[in-house]
Structures are given as C-alpha cells and as structure tokens.
Image (cartoon, rainbow, N blue to C red; front, side, top):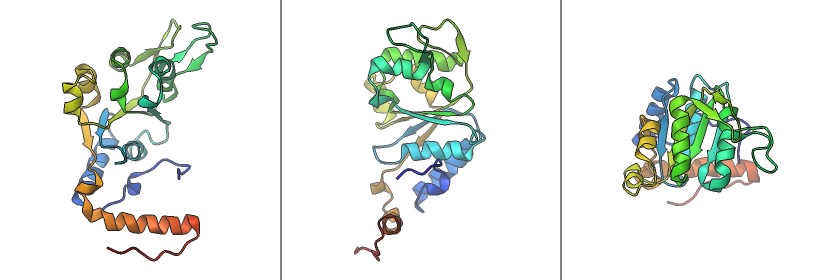
Length: 213
C-alpha cells in the first residue's frame, strides 16, 4: 500500500544497531548534494531509503522521480531518461525525459547495473556535464538534479563481471549505503511482525493479537 506522500526516515522500522547506523548515515548525507549508491538485496527497501534521503534533505519540496532501469527495454530507456523531440522518429512528440522532469529534485535510478554499456556511457556523460539532450534535439538542457542509484548485487561483483562501467560506478558512489538483509538484523523481526499485524488489523478490519515465537 503506497501512501500519497513519500516515505521518510521514521518509516524505516527497526531498532537494531544496523538500522540505527543506517538512519544515522541517511541524516548525515541527506542535506548534502552528494550522489548516493544504495546496495541491498531484493526486498531490503532500497526505494524506501532513497525516498527517506530526499524527504530528509533540502530538496524535499521538489520532485522525487523514480525509475527501475531493469523494467524498461534498452531501446526505450534512452527516450525515457532524456526525452524526445517531435520528428526524431515515427510518432515522436516533444516530451521531457525524467532527468529534465526531476529538475531541482532527486532522480532515483534502481538496478542501474541492468543498463547496457552504451546507455551507461550516455548517463555518465550527462552526469559529468550536468546537461542532457533530448533524442532528436539540438539543444543541451542543463539540469540540477540529485542522483541516487541502487544495485541489488555487491558492487565488487558488478565491477569484476563488467556489469557496470568503473567510471560510472565511481561517479555514482562517493557515498555508499549498504542495506542489511533481515537475517543480519534478527532483533528487528518481532518489531516488524508487530508493525505488520497492527497495519493489517487496521486495513483488513481484523483483530489478530500476536503470533507465536
């Protein structure tokens, strides 16, 4: 169930030392413009953390735009990121890309390692120059956007298997946040179980009191 508003730091549930350390790092980095790379296995809450960084920082009143790079075919990803100019290909219209749409705010790129090398090169150039050109366009558009990206495999593995360009990786990762899986913070299981019981009692009109060990 998605709320109308973005998640904040208080929506990260847990009292384990791993979660307390993560929240501390989020608060430290949120008010800067540092580019952040989040690493965590599937289901560890990478988008929740990205939203919390945005909601806690100075860009909180600007747009937060999210894109899962693995969900889009490579042929479409470039037009989604950079936008299009009418006539650049059959059916193309003047349309902003999501980089342009996030102006002043935050762009979250999930599973960035799924991009093909050619697309990674174009993203790197745009980040270095802080300019993007729509497909078929002549003018480069300057942008002021904070980039938060995420991967679901250890960065060292991605680099060793050449699934992410080294130059792009270092551009994206001056700050790295590693999200611990639940098996590494078992102290949070009871708290999370209680949270979800109360949540589903409320939304499904039930009265479950608890669960066994």
